[in-house]
Image (cartoon, rainbow, N blue to C red; front, side):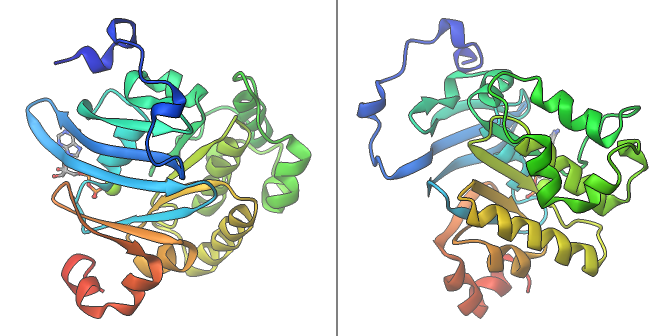
Length: 256
Ligand SMILES: Nc1ncnc2c1ncn2[C@@H]1O[C@H](COP(=O)(O)OP(=O)(O)O)[C@@H](O)[C@H]1O
Ligand SMILES: [Mg+2]
C-alpha cells in the first residue's frame, strides 16, 4: 500500500513516449490520497497543457489544498493510488524533494518565508537548488517592491509583499509547474490587484500554473481552464469562461 511513497521500491514507469495524450504537460490520473485513515482526494483527474493556467476551485474543505499537496508529493495526504505525470516524469513515484527537482514549486497558503533572512537571502537560497531559475535582476524587474526591500528581513514584509516573495522564490528555482494556494488570501484589494498584475505577466511568459483561490472570479479572470472540486471529487471541468457564464454552477459549487 505504501509502495508509492518509496520510489526505490517502484518499478520504473513507462517511457515518456508511452504516456498517453502527449498534449498534456501535467496529467493527474485518478489520484486517491489520505490523511491517515481519512480518505480525502477521491479519484481526481485533470490535465493541463503547457503554458496554461488552471483554476482549481470549490468550497472550503473541497480538497483543493490536499490535491496540490498530493501533486507536490508531500507526505500528507499520502498518495495511495493514481498517477501524476509532469512533462513525461512520473511524479507519483517521487518524494517531495524529487518532485521539487522535477520542477514542481508549491507556494503554500502560509507563504513560509524563512525567518532571519533578508528578501535577497530568501531568493539566493532558493537559487542554491540544482537547476536554478530566474536571476535576481530578472526577479527584481518583475517585483520592484522586492527590489526596494531587498535588505529587509522577509518576515517583516507586509502580507502582500510576503506573497510576492513566495512567488518570486518559486521563480528563482527550476520551475515547470507553479502551484499557488490562495495567493490573494487576507490581502487588501489594492494588493490583490498588484499581485494579479504580476500573475498576468507570469502568464505571458508561459509558466504552467494551478491557482487555488476562494476569490473564484479573480482566479477565473486569470485562468484558461477550471476544475471544480466537491468533497474530493471533480464536479466540473471546462474553460474558465464556462464557469463565469454559468450562474447555476457558480452558485452550487462556489457560492458566488
Ligand atoms: N492534516 C489533515 N488531517 C486530516 N484531515 C485533513 C487535514 N487537512 C485537511 N483535512 C481535511 O481534508 C478535507 C479537504 O481539506 P483541504 O484540502 O484543505 O480543502 P480546501 O483546500 O479545498 O479548503 C477537509 O475535510 C479537511 O478537514
Ligand atoms: Mg485550502
